[in-house]
Image (cartoon, rainbow, N blue to C red; front, side):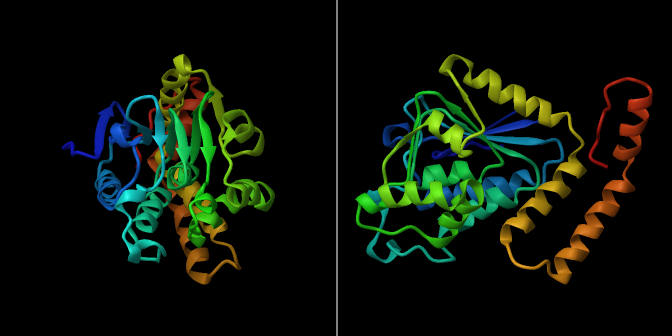
Length: 261
């Protein structure tokens, strides 16, 4: 895939790494970065050989320092449904297969929301994690707050949003904000080991289960449309050649080779 200024995409085997590439700005997000992230994920959906995405920041100072304050216009202060931030987060959340945030440095504001929107988070031990809008005199958008409520519950969400104070990676692990904390020299090994392991799994069950988790996070009663979607996802998995391959490999005591069909 072609590289661009703000997002670099690198694919190795079944794993694609998306690098937030603004190290001089601690990988802060702009409209351009967010639009590129959304568009890149949409392109990757069409590539059948990709089984897992890793999102990381360039360099080792920051995963992402949040939305670039200097790039915000007056009319952008209130983030609405059509804002590129909302659209990029939805693209991450709705990407069919697992997305891992490799938090290789500090993650603040929208950068921490980006990590929270990923399916799994591997965090370097010396990273600080924060949602600081209250210290800047601005509010945060509802969809972002809801993402944290779903992930860590109202108690820790209140602490993050109402104090604006940074927390350690270790506290993030204790509260469920991140899934793994590791020293810097082991960060890539753990992240890409996890991504490779995911890449060996059957794609169709991962797609169906991620979709069902996302439906649950939407809240409210299950709609007829979503009930039908779940039934069709389950039927597709049951009738797949991968399901037959998994059963056959189990009885033959070998590792299955899944093809996503």
